[in-house]
Image (cartoon, rainbow, N blue to C red; front, side, top):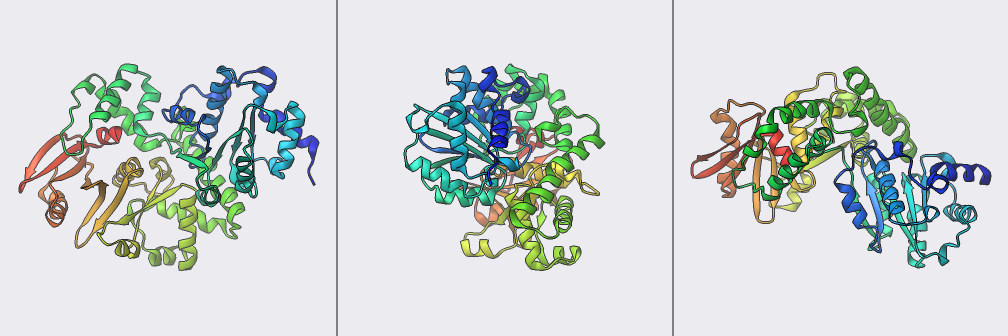
Length: 448
């Protein structure tokens, strides 16, 4: 039974701008991610905006920043409604929620010019897509902006909303965002974006314009590689403390609360052990039988739990590159954690795996694969007709054996360019009539 008085209290609690006409500063954070501009551009689009991504990446903060923008641009405060469905009291029949909203604000929804509904962690609202579809199809003047940290439930809901949504994924901060957050240097920011804009995977880029900032950028890269890109940890300096917070806020809440509730998992410790195993083996091939034996899980549950972690955006996978789609589907996948900070929760975090993980994470929005056939290529980037092999060697003394796989790949697929991601080398080298582009890791991830 709906507790209307409690629901009213919760709604007032989540909408302080109804009373004070502004978003409290402590909800806004002191940094705006570049993605905010994109999200704001969707506000006039006749689509439901779906914002998804892992926990603690700043999705809710972005919602508050969008609300702040609307208030500053003349939208009446009570025409902006926010509700988080993490709160059990909020998980009511959505029609009941809209009735309470209309009662509290004295607005009749279908008569309003436009009302903005911000629904946070919407996957916890049962049948959320059914309600949104109904209001959308009835042409109610409601702009829905929803967020969620469960890929499977968001995708399932979005399937019934086909043609009605636009989606954005919010990940932990990229390295260029991390630099911008810490340095707050407009000149450097413009320079990074200029180099990004002109960056060509086939040409040797220049980092001369970054020389005045290079020492500071490298220090921040080492810190970013170690701590990762979860923004709520940026001001926590003590390693023991940020590891504790990261484990509690991201891993334990996802595994012991979100996934248990969403998928009725009976043995969450087994899922946590699997996550810790993947933390130590990020960037490696997924040998399901070996993992199942190590953790004393069945193969069926191992595969299922890995998929749950993927749906929670804690891990992502790469398929093996092949000209045959059928072969791609049948081959073993590689698995990466979404952020190198999470890898610090492993018993023995490996620097090389952390670096490769962060390179893959910065390329995952592109068409990315790995390759293996008597030799292995860490990543293969497909861009239209281009096929670019990428190897990660976090060192500056490169031996002929380090290039062997790249040269074989170029010869096999008759390609002319390859990328070797190093610790600090920047040069272009010709080998057997083919070009190897050496790029420092910090520079490469800054541009991708």
